[in-house]
Length: 302
Image (cartoon, rainbow, N blue to C red; front, side):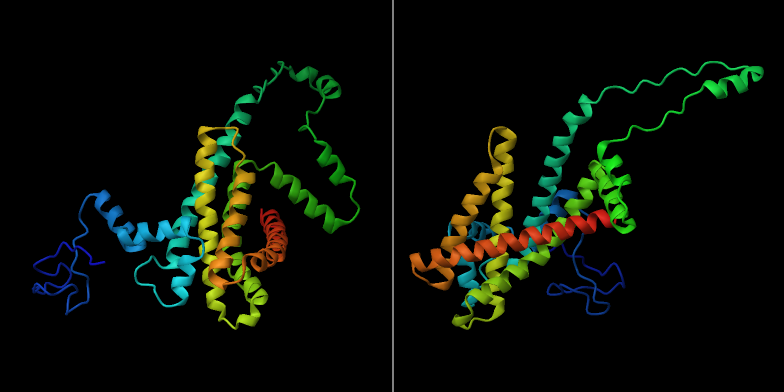
């Protein structure tokens, strides 16, 4: 897509006098484009540059949502210029996804904060110097309330395991700070899981002698669809609180994966189904391990 430039007549950096054809200064290399405009113009330019926010974006979105596997197939046969690049689309959608997820997490913690009873601070009686020893003898030391988890951790004999459990208990009490830290690490985890899922597909379809990058593009498109679907489901949940996000996202994702595998790898419907079962099992088993590892890292780094 051609960029709409607001050109200078003279380079503000070195003073070179521009010609109409100069998009960059021949003298110093600075772009001939005026950025001193309202923020809304800069935001629109960002969307255009990132997603090609025109017909290309909407066609890409339409194919991604309603034609499982078609974008991957077109990428593999070389039809790429008409669609948003897979990684660029993934990064943008994942940023929106984790932003929405953090908003949901914050909204869930608000009722808990409102239900907490107010803390009453007892008045400290006035003590005369002559009564100080008597007061010290009768005084009781107020210690923070200990939970059953704290008591269980103190009974652990192994020092290493005890330290790890102390960190876990502390992390669980961290509230919003711990939640945001975990979300940040999960976003990085998903970025690592994406090429791993591509390798799973590479192993299951090894006989087709495809290059790994074809399986990787399938994984990128599938995870982008998953993020978009979850964003939509969370929006429905915000309107209708009884909506079961996890169940709907899981089954629609599995159905989408089935048709995407059939579209890209050209197996029969029955053969694709029998491929889907072990692929899904290995993927969710790997996802569980990745998440537990991410949780452990988040706790140890807290």
